Image (cartoon, rainbow, N blue to C red):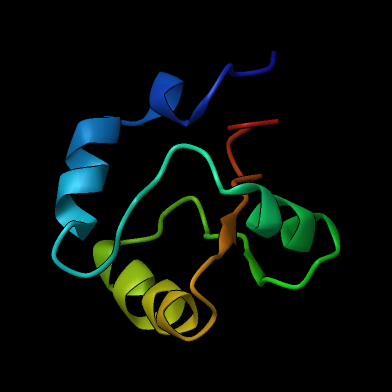
Length: 81
């Protein structure tokens, strides 16, 4: 079974508001960033299913601040396939 989107699984508004003081969350990347993403110029992170907020704060946020964009891919649990 394939899930439709991030918001299908998660409370997108809560996720966005939790990050609002640290980063800007967008639903779609500008074209230049989309092209860079296709060329793998940004890090891809696969959080474990049991990832707590500290994982995102300690592992994802530093890379996000450095690179401006990260790709989150959730495999465990079948999400966002």
